[in-house]
Length: 444
Image 1 (cartoon, rainbow, N blue to C red):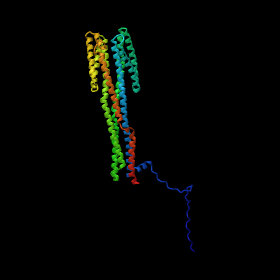
Image 2: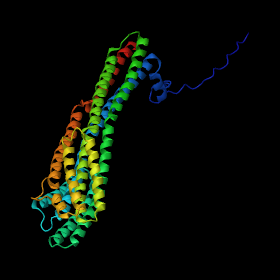
Image 3: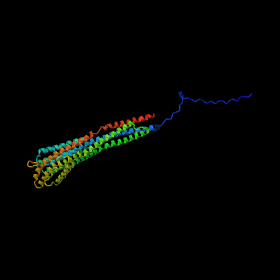
Image 4: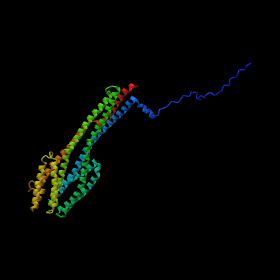
């Protein structure tokens, strides 16, 4: 009997354990790194569209910011130029009042005793005006406060010496002339150098602002051209990829940038041109008239000091000639504005020549009569100089007003792109996004 061969026993293995929560184990998905996800977002034609979208939109916003900055640059420069010009005129008015007061004091000293009431009042008014202008100027320009404070201290010293000179002169004491010379020295060596430094500082500020007006044009034009280059490249690439000639929203954004660039560039160039014309004409004539008036008063003071010196006033006579030459030069620079002013100054110089002729000829009393004015003298120095003084003051006021008006007109002519610049850039960026989204939709 044959025996059947038994099969080998089956091997047993424990069943795979399931998760204790009863859920089946699922293979983990492969996750992308952030860098890979960004790279995938810019892959292919849609990705390049997104890249163009970002670049064009960013350039639109940058253009808007640059346009706004350009207009703020020019508007601010015009505003500061106007303010600094007003401060410069203010400082020069201080200078004029000081040399005017000194001319009154020296001329009145020739009279002896009590000076003419009108002349005394003019002296007092000139010093009071100078003090008031110092306060006003310190408020208007904080950068000048320290120098103006020092100037005010020198005026206190100057006025004290003048009062000492007057008191001694009324008593006929010779020491009065020394006090007058000391007062003149304080003015020339302490006060006027401070004033001249203030004038120079404010002239530099004005020139800087005049130059800054044109820089706003650079902001608008350069940023506009760069934005337009980006728009043109974007439109050209889209036309080649999508076989459509024009993407209307993006083209509208480019047109908006182009119009803003043209309007802004023309407006800013016009403002810069007006500022340049103002600087070359009304402003230059204002400076020339101010300098002429200051030099004229300086000449007037030296005329009196020459007579006070009684034969030893060569230095003062030379100072007169130097100051008179400055007047002639500055009036020449203000030609076209100085209606009859050169003739009035020439009339004064003729009388001055008569004063010097009488003095050098030994007729000191006659020279003094011509210099201070009297009932016996005709066409004296006082009358001729007063005629020049009033006329030059009126014309100076006219030119300084013209500077302010012209700069204000230049500012008023600027379109409101200073605050519309950023909204314009944002609108252009939204138009780019709209136009590109239309093409991106075709790939979904």
